[in-house]
Amino acid sequence: MTGLLAILLLAAAGVAHAQRAPASPPPVAPPRRTTHQATVDVRFDNGLRLTMMPVRGAPVAHVVLAIRAGRLTEPLTRRGIAAVTAAYLREGSTAYSRESLADAIADLAPLGGDLSVSAGDAETLISGTVLPEEAPALVRLLASLVAEPAFPASALERLTDSEADRVSSENVQPATRASSLADSLLGFDERVWSPPRALALRALTRDDVVAFWRRAYRPSAAQLYVSGVYDAAAIREVAERAFSSWRDTATGLVPVASEAPDAPARAGTGLVIHLVDRPGATQARVVVGYRTVDPSHPDFTPLQVLHNVLGSVQSSRIVASVRERHGYSYNVSSGLLARPSSSRWTVSADIANAAVSPALREILAEIERMSRDGVGGDELASFQTLLVGDLTIENATPEGRVRTLRRIALFRGDPAYLDTFAERIFAVTPSQLQSVARKYLAPSRAVIVVVGDRKQIEPSLAALGVVAPIR
Image (tube, rainbow, N blue to C red; front, side, top):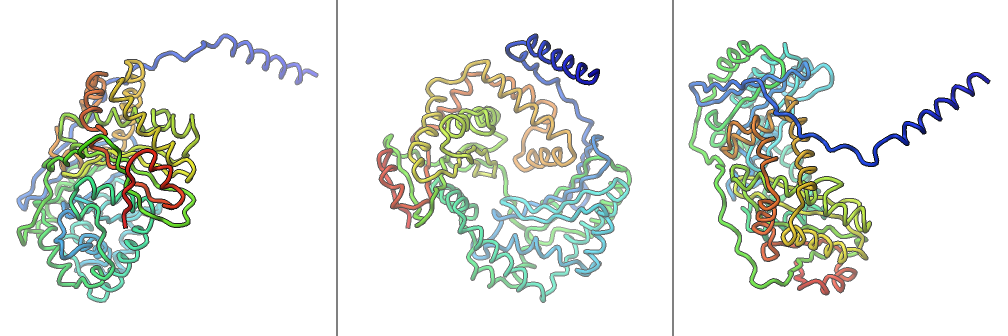
């Protein structure tokens, strides 16, 4: 009986506490200014830059070698060469066979870590996370792989086949097809949106790979980042010695942060919906895209805030309308993608056939409402607080700090960004946000792509605008 009485008393106390709770939560205070420990930058004689940044949150060291060699540096006649060259780095060097390289990686990352190698639009990244005492050994390993790669001829067919299979598999996905077509219609570089053909990949030779490596893998186009917990003096000494044999052997093209010419606005105000037929599909992939500016541009910070207000989180306007209020799509969001000379903001969604037209109408209506009516101060402040909180959390990790500093270097941004992003975000005003929406999200600048069953969705889409089938 005593135990039952205690439970009843606790339940009553809980009810009384709930009754005393305020009707609405108190306003969230703006995050305090974030201060970071000083970043150390060193440039070696061969042109390689070393950037070290201490982050005390986790007892690990995160090491990244970023080389400006990606899809945007590929010759048009050698499409896919950046990915194949990056994959070749896992095949070893003059100091490591493929097998001994695997053993070395396992020794450096005993808790299940790995060495990541990937080629993107503008960069090839080689990275790993290790215990602090293993950071110098990881730096030596990276130096061997990029300065003295073995490029065994026996691996070529396997690597090109693997990349051809990956590209072929990815390219048939509705999301990839819609995104690529949108990039094409926005006028971006062909190497951004047009995937290499399987036959072209399988035609690549070892000489092609070596030529690309000599042209693009150059210390003057590379930056080594070490973040987290590490011995700075040891890292600097090892990096200078390990990379000393790596020299520029050819003149290559390095992507720069220059803004591409703006895509011409479409004449008139009528919507054009580019429709890719996918017979039998029960849902459609919808992409609404707009060309924007690179992160070094003053308008990029307001665009970050606009992205938050419109579609980046569940409480954003488009998500709240399309997903929460109407239930048209579970998977709807916006993305602000920064690429040299080809940055864009898009809204993407997977939508059941019957809801494609009303969902697209809601997406466009929310964008138009932002341009027409703007945003209130309280709503803006809530999203600014959320965005600053997310950025603060991201930059409190070794990986997040490296991502931020890589972007600053790639787009020649403000080195003080890390210490000032909160002030910049909170300085965006409602009128500035509305102005940016009108400037970049005008109806005449929109590209709309739908990938779905034409027979099922074309009649309803035709009620919104002109349907342009893509063959």
